[in-house]
Image (cartoon, rainbow over all chains, first blue to last red; front, side, top):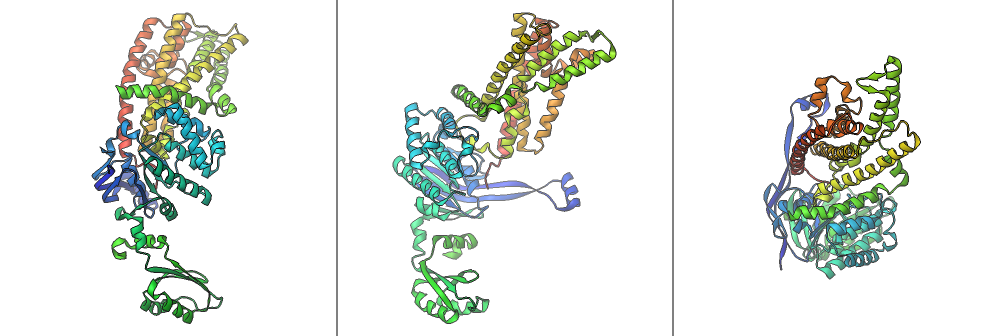
Length: 337
Length: 274
């Protein structure tokens, strides 16, 4: 299948101004500027085929947004190459831009003081959308996202969720081949998040649009993407099917232990008590502890937990994907593997 | 060529969109757009009155009080049609990263700015006409009329071309937001300098001849002062032709500078986002 995004050893280095602290530092920086190179992306090899839904995750500063900006031609890569729809991302023409869309969760592309439908009308002209197709798409998308009656309401009078849904309608009006969504569910309630996720799934299935979704919310990725790309301090540490990552969790269990008031609390000496079971402490809260333990050891481990603590309640689950991702963020993929 | 045609195709739609934005709030439309620039002439009227009263002169620099009022009316009408720092908001959009969304669109950012300019100038022309008509009805004895239809056409051409130069200067200064965080003060400085160099504060004819001559090489002179003088019949069509040549040179130079500033600014733009 045709590859729509192709990065080969792509990297991006920013030069940032360093300001010394204090009055003397301020005076020095005023006369003598010091800059420092900040590597935002390094050695990114990535190939995305048409119709794929790719989840792009990483902690703050991992390079997700920079990668999206490089791929959409907003900023150029400083090392390697990055192409979109077969053309160098830094030299996209209006022909490629016509097939592209970008939604930034924290930056509205619709005008605040007028109804969304008026902004859509301008987008219709910019992207040369036929009048009948435009009417049909706006109606269908608004219906799917549940904002039909709000199309003619001033954008500033809409809720955050409704505004984001309008942004998404605007992004899909011209039936783009590639869509980049940068944290589209940020700050939204659970119902709005779910509606947007299901809309993205439907549109990918029905229209075959390639979707690159960046999010801090693993639930977004799990609900929509088949493929996951993880960035860690500017490097790509995982690129594979979400199911492959989930496979790593099959043999592990997350155990939440709720303690009785007055029970013994966790302390570092207890580390030696849990190590023989291959268990890892995930969280130590006031009256609860969370562990991750190999599935085969869970029964023996639980018995030991009852010996060590006054247990009020206990829950066993397959380890959430989020925990694994957190570990990847913290230690990188190699250590985890 | 096709890219230019595409931009021109989109332009009327951007203008229509800007109209909807400008008219989103009725009070905003009246106070921000229609009454724009009408406070200054009221103050200037008192200043001119005081100057004549205190000096007891019948004429100042070749202007009678009546002519000075006529000058004031024409410069106020012209000034309404010029872009100012508030009307574009380009610097703010660059500084806050909001232009990121426009950079992925298949239409140039300048087309969107131009749409705002056309909408603003069109609306201000209409408002200026209404303002002039209202004055002509209320105080017909004092209200100035263009000396001829030709002078009106020449003045209008100079004003429109001058307004475009003002747009380019504002765009260039706003693009400095890619590098600086003090664009607002630069725009303010330009406003004050341009007010002086355009004859908005004081008619340039009242200044020494050398200053008058020096200012005539700059576009503000041909945007406010010269059209007002044409409408008063104090300047000829030959002068207007010189004005067009000066303006043409400025337009070419500013357009090139705008393109360079934008390209360089975009090259160092980090965009919005984490």
